[in-house]
Amino acid sequence: MHPELSTINITPTSTHKYSVIWLHGLGADGHDFESIVPSLQLKAEANIHFVFPNAPIQPVTINNHMKMRAWFDILAMSLEKHTVDIPGIYQSADLVQKLIQKELDKGITAENIMLAGFSQGGAIALHVGLRYPQKLAGILALSTYLPTIDQLRSEGSVAGKTTPIFMAHGILDGVIAIEAGKLTFDNLTSLGYCIEWHDYLMEHSVCAEEILHMSAFMNLIFI
Image (cartoon, rainbow, N blue to C red; front, side, top):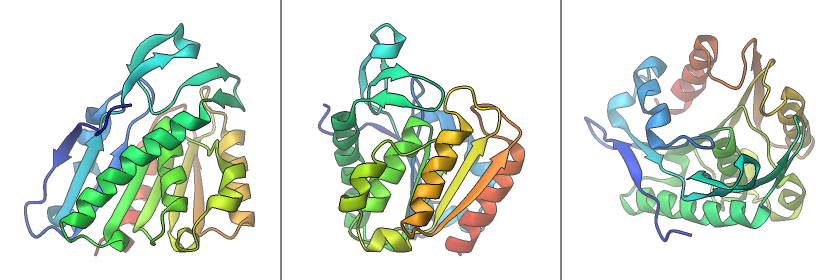
């Protein structure tokens, strides 16, 4: 794996107080969610450093081993369950933790660093955030699920239980079935995580109503 992720950045226009590390989905890149920032209408936007990493390029089994940006390989796929490369998740998680460390090194506290991710990126955001030794600002997990839920039972941090989580999913999602996302939500809820669930009449995508709800979630944290 690459020693360090390349990133697209939106730098703060005022004092840097908060950081958001936003992970794209399979086959996309860091530019994928760059344009969402103005739509979020964040009160503290001028104080936020947005980091949009590019996933490493690797062959993806279900896509005829074509090379593309991916946080982990998907070996087989059905609507409700993907068979994934679990070690690959841990490798990407290490790379994302290095990005968190970069923000910490700038003097931003862990509690002011948010992880966000869509699809594969959301799985990594959950995997990293719920194991992180300190409370983070929050986790946005969009149209995703957590393949490492079983490992989390023994690996989850105490601090992770206090990190607020926003999960959102499309009812018509034909890539990751809403049942997979809801099962992750139910399991995390039963384990005592601080989590809210939203679903929308959409496919494997993001919609305007969801952006409004994300905005509300983030504006309670970034003040």
